Structures are given as C-alpha cells and as structure tokens.
Length: 387
Ligand code: ADP
Ligand code: MG
Image (cartoon, rainbow, N blue to C red; front, side, top):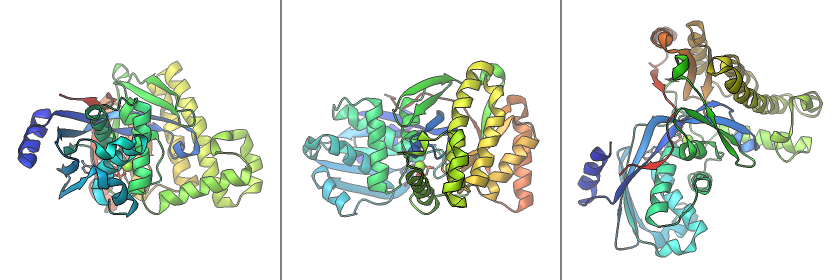
C-alpha cells in the first residue's frame, strides 16, 4: 500500500515523502445517534483505510492533493485561521485543513510551523456511512501530530477531528467515528462512553464462531452537513431540554412513560430511539461477553426497527437490504451510520454470505434500485504509521 502512495506522492510533488500514515473507516455495530446525546456506541475500525503520504517543506505552506479529486489546494498555515473564519475552506479540503486548523487551536505556534505536502488515497467508500470522513481526519491528525512533534494522545486527536468536522466542514457529528478510527483494535469493537470518553475494548470473536459482518452499501448517498442529521440532533436537544436533563443519556427506559406525556409525538419517538438504543448498546456488550457474537442478532434487529420507525432515518434500500439479509440466514441486520442512505450491516455465518449477497443483489434489481456493493469487513487496528 505505501509503495503505491509513495509513487503517487512523487508524481504530485517531485520529491519523496517523509512518511506514510493511515487510518481506517469504521462500522458501527450498534449505537446510532447516541454519541451526540452523551450516550454509548460500539463501533469497530474496518480493514478499509485512508492513507496519507506527507513531506515536510521549508516554508509555511500546506499543499493538498487526493486521488479522490483533481483539485489541489495550497495555502499558508499563517493564513489558515483567516481562511476558516472567512468560509474559504470548503469541499474535500475542509477535512484535512480543518484538522490542521483544529490542531492550531490547541497550539497557537502552528501558524509558524513548517509547511507540509500531503497526498491522500483511500479505499474507504465515500458517503456510505463507513466514515471516510473520520478516516481522512484521523490519518491527517496522526501524521501532523508526529511531524509537528505535538505529542497529543489519541483521545485528543479524536476531539481534533471532531472539531474540524463540526467547525470547518460544518457537520454537527459526534465523537464516535474519530474514536473508532484512532482507538480501534484488531478483532475487537470499541465501547465508548461519549460523555466520559471512557473506552473499553470488547472482543468480537467473529472468526472463531464462523461469523462475519457483511457491509451492504446501498449507494444511496447521504450528507451529514445538511438536512436530516441536523434536524434529528435538534429534536434530541429539544427533548432533553423539555425533560429537564442535560442530555438524553440521563434518561432510562423507565423514564419513557413520563416522557411520552410531556413531548409531542415526533419528539417522543426521537427520544425513545436514543434511550432504547443506549440500552441496546449496553445489552450488546453484555451479550458479547456472556454469549459471544451469535447472541447479539436480535439487538441488531431491534436497533434497525427503532431507527426505521422511531428515528425515521432509514430509506427503502436499507430496509430491503436488512430484511433480505435476515430472510437468507443473517443472525441480525441493521442500517449503520447516520442514515438517509449509506450502508447496512448483516451479522451472518460465513457459510451464508454468498447466499445473502446474491439474494440482496436480486432483490435490489427486482425493486428497481441501483446495484448495491457488498463486502465483508473485519475489525482492524486504528490509525498508525505505515512507514
Ligand atoms: P462518510 O464519512 O460516511 O464517508 P461524509 O459525507 O461524512 O461521508 O464524508 C465524505 C467526504 O469526506 C467526501 O465527500 C470528501 O469531501 C471527504 N473525503 C473522504 N475521503 C476522502 C479522500 N480520500 N480524499 C479527499 N476527501 C475525502
Ligand atoms: Mg462522515
């Protein structure tokens, strides 16, 4: 992987890079729209990564190129603050430049730091709910942290990526994606308490149980920066305010009957999704510990129903992927990611993957939907230096 990106770097910048860093996308096993409610999530880093080759410069310029786009971007680090404040940092460059800016918010000296040339390449599907955004942020964050000798820990770098995405990209996302991309561990999921940022490694044991997680990318594209995501987040804040709690995390399933009388129907259902989803994450962690991965299927199914009916963030393609996977041998299935498109995941016996895949492809064709993309994922290590 790094040989390829090194030669791309040479072609773009006519010099050798100093090093190559990478960070993975993620699948969220369970816990959707809980992160910005101070709740619980259980993602894992996947074996699809964004790779960054970096060269140090003698001046203060940051230059960016990506195999994702023909556009290249160049500006001085000293100008970065003003460019962000003036809304001049846009498009895909907002992710890497946003990270540089957010690092600068922590360390004012960066305006005078050595410039860098960055070349970005990725095999994380973009806009599929597998967080290509966190992958690019986290890869750039670990690269810059190292070459600028900032010595920041992984939790701080997760905050940096989130700050970039919130303040520069303009997507009001939580801390989950960057945490998974930075803290992921092979063959395990990352349990994250989004209030305390406490993390725990939860072994998945998929392979020893002859199970796999199949991603079904519907190719229906979503955008977090607009519309529904922002709307759902506002409903959660309104629900918490009306119920007099700092965040929906502070409510339990027992509080729902009281909440129902105090909220309008739509807000109540948004709240019910978050409250029950938090409970499902905790149950999933327990079930993995006591019964192994085969024991979590019904929790995945219940999560999907809650997102479809209460949070209303599914689309017909995701519902079809989930139901066909279930009918063809999956132990459980749900949409994953922010919703309104993107991917579903199915937990299935390895022996059934082919049958499920063929059935989903057939069903999509029959429904007149665009062909989905299917691939199994394994839980992988988080961001790292490649060479
Ligand atoms: P997701 O995170 O689900 O893939 P997002 O909309 O959050 O979707 O992020 C996708 C955006 O991130 C892309 O439209 C692009 O702007 C940026 N991005 C992702 N990967 C790359 C890459 N390899 N190079 C440049 N920009 C990228
Ligand atoms: Mg994203």
